[in-house]
Amino acid sequence: MSLEIAVIPCLRDNYAFLLHDRATGATAVVDTPEVGPINAALEARGWHLTHILNTHHHPDHVGGNRMLCDTHGCQIIGPASDAHRIPGLHEGVGEGDAVMLGQIQAVVWDTPAHTSGHISYYFAEASALFVGDTLFAVGCGRLFEGTALQMWSAMHRYRSLPDHTRVYCAHEYTASNIRFARSIDPSNEALARRAQEVEQLRAADQFTVPTTIAQEKATNPFMRADDPMLAAAVQRSGASPADVLGEIRRRKDRF
Image (cartoon, rainbow, N blue to C red; front, side, top):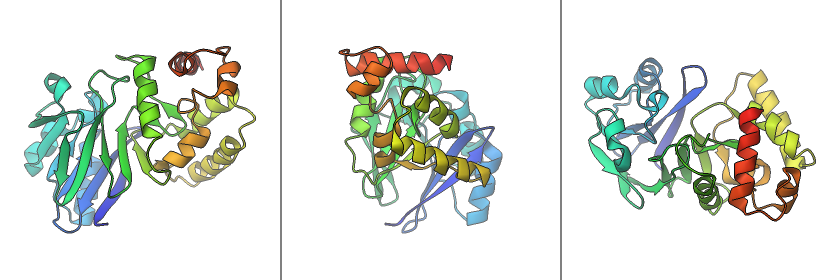
């Protein structure tokens, strides 16, 4: 696989991701939280930015669009349904559209819930999924503009991917997400193991992103909202997965 991926820490807890097609030199950044670290990472690698791939309109995801575009002359791609909220957008995309980075294709998924226009980018050949703020390691995004049903639809779709798929989420929230998850799922041995791993990684100042679909299926309560044990733990036995997810999200908001 000729796709090289670099994780770029930005702001307080954001990540941007540089994607580089070795065969053609095409290089994209997924979201633009902060210009300085992105430019420094490009310069260190000798890469030229050709594309910006936005997942949603929040300022910590699109704040660097115009400056990076002015500097590099790159193409800005983002959700068509949110075109009016994506600075400098050149191409709007939505469900099922293909985005080419050199010779490598991503398919766009509509994944509203965190925001109404949120999209994800799935690079099947590279087994890489870029989810913005919809999915986090052991968590999910807040329901600012969407519904629990929309979020459950996204979780259900994500977990249909191969277990080895790497998931690139846009914030370093894993440790706090684990603390919450263990409060409602204390007997989950996979979650306990993940807690130890994350503690060691953060103590060494290392990233917990990317995660994998396998890890999330085993440890993420939002991806497991159809598990009767979790439903019982949040007093929603017999409820739909979307209702269970909604209750878990409400509890996380108050945690």
